[in-house]
Length: 261
Image 1 (cartoon, rainbow, N blue to C red):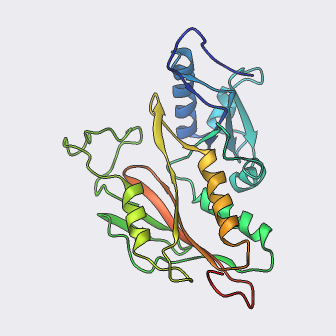
Image 2 (image 1 turned 135 degrees about the vertical axis):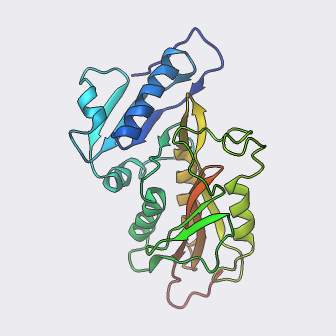
């Protein structure tokens, strides 16, 4: 069902919007999306909240007859295995990530590559060196967390041009910074790895989203790069202007195939 306000022009139009998690953050995002729809700032085909807990806040507050919001009780990784597997670069769907979620989009790309090439090694490896942002931490699973903020940011910050903390111009953004970083690295064939970055940007009423089309395009890029059996390496990141999680995804070459073939 499409929930829309056709009387107003200039609205942002989406397919399905998926919210990761139905707890305190998810319930806040649901409230804000409802307000955006009611104000005519946003149209969508529906909002799906995914949580493993049948008693999460959104599930408790919702109604089975809700015309806008539905809840799916599922593991996030299992949900995305189903939902993203059929996504195309032309989709208008979007995902609202949780501030505390694991690196789900990277995990989906890993799972997709392993399903595509079951006999090839598909792994994440630590970054060869830190990107050099003001704050960063390396996690045991190969995820490198980066931030331009050395302070605690409010959860509802929309990362405006004027930083609410410094009171000065926000002259930084992680996506271009990480693309420049990727250009300094060298993959198995001696060329820089592709920078596959999923940028979460503010869309309406304080809700940030990642476009599913970008995730589908990244999967297609990995498939093209490795289709002849060559090794593949890509810097995969989910980022906002200020914060992000990045990893190096590596697909091993087929035996007897030279890197870059």
